[in-house]
Amino acid sequence: MPNHLRNIAENYYQQKCSDVEKIPQSGSARAYHRFYFDGKPSLIGVINADIKENEAFFSFTDTFLKQGIHVPEILWIDPSRKYYLLQDLGNETLFSLMNQNRKGSSVGEKTLNYYKNVLQELPLIQIAGQKGIDFSVCYPRDAFDQQSMLWDLNYFKYYFLKLAHIPFDEQLLENDFQSFIHYLSQADSHYFMFRDFQSRNIMIYDEKPYFIDYQGGRKGALQYDLASLLYDGKANLPQEVRDQLYEYYLDQMGERIDLDREQFAQYYQGFVLIRIMQAMGAYGYRGYYEKKTLFLQSIPYAVKNIAQILQNLKLPIEIPTLLAVLERITQTDFEISSPFPDDQLTISIRSFSYKKGIPEDPSENGGGFVFDCRALPNPGRFAEYKSLTGRDLEVQSYLEQYEEVDQFKQHIFQIIQLSIDNYLERKFNHLMVNFGCTGGQHRSIYFADSLAKKIKERYPQINIIVKHTQFPEL
Image 1 (cartoon, one colour):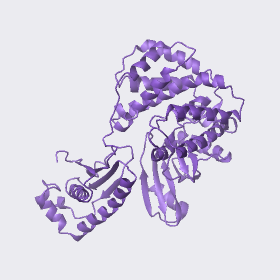
Image 2 (cartoon, rainbow, N blue to C red; image 1 turned 45 degrees about the vertical axis):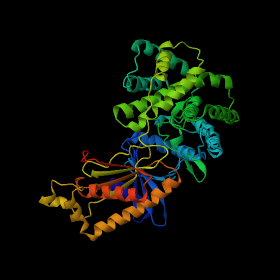
Image 3 (tube, rainbow, N blue to C red; image 1 turned 120 degrees about the vertical axis):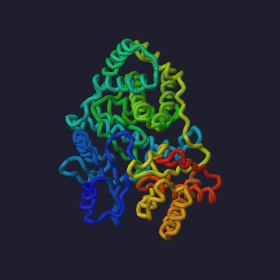
Image 4 (cartoon, one colour; image 1 turned 60 degrees about the horizontal axis):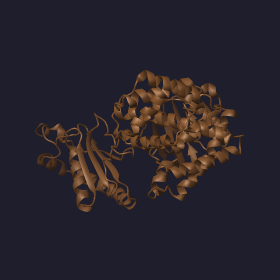
């Protein structure tokens, strides 16, 4: 984390921060940090070198706040426009709340009510496009027009179809893309389109929905954002809930504008399809190309959504090749099983070298504990231990002669035990713990193995996976 961002945060409150937490990144290059201050609210510091994207976020936020729409307040903007501070909205999202309250195939009454609250706000956001949004700052494009649609469809073609080895006739598919785009571009598109209106971008703060990650917004059709929310992949909403929320949205929007429900429905299915294809392009890029298996786990949900749409699809255009490709996708097995059982808590313990970086979390939780062992005595400084690891008795004996090593070990287990007890009670299925040292050879391996042994003794029902990233053969 650049010291400049920390200095900005400390200057804002005129005191030293007591702790800093790096927030896991998802699909963007923006870096987020949470700063804690004694006696003051925590705040979020953001680093983003893309100034045009930042300017769009600043402008949209200002307009939304003036119109009473729930978005984070911008506390400070650095003169460089690359760093800024935001109000901290916490960690609970609509997606995490839904997972906590889901009962079988039911989303639960609490979650359903939050979705309805969101759909009361969505029309206000969309109509803001006609009440002060400066579309000249939109980035990378000011409208979800034919060019934008073509970008999304090519994203789907090159990063999903090709990387997933789905066969297709490129020219015939391109012809259908053009027909599909021409059709969708006839929908009324004079509203603000959030662009990524999905459950992970809706925070639950002070028992109200707040909205984030709208810097990619632009002028567009009403149907797109509704499709994004209701066909949000891993949210996996039951179709009857989608149908109920669809009607609820139309009622809300109908109170604000003269809405032609039949015309809205005519274009809605098309926007559902293009949104799903855009998402699948992202899953393919992050999963197949960047090798982030977490994104591959979203593909089966998108495939399920495509299958449901195709069952009742009615479009007034002929796109046979595109529909055949989509049908072929639904007949392909994309099931990527979770690496962890749902009915058992798994603890992943890693040793690593700080020179190589902190290991990536194989679950969707964004990471866990990271303990820095570099302040402890280092056997790697002595020639007799150079070829040994933390699994060798000589290294263990060296470390265990120091009182601070034992204290470190005890404190860590006490901290981890709090999370284990809580995770077992809440029926979570994964916790990650990392131990790092200079070379990932001695101290980190010793503590990883020690913790695994201690947990196994105290919690025999827990599944433990230990990996030493610098020494995978151990």
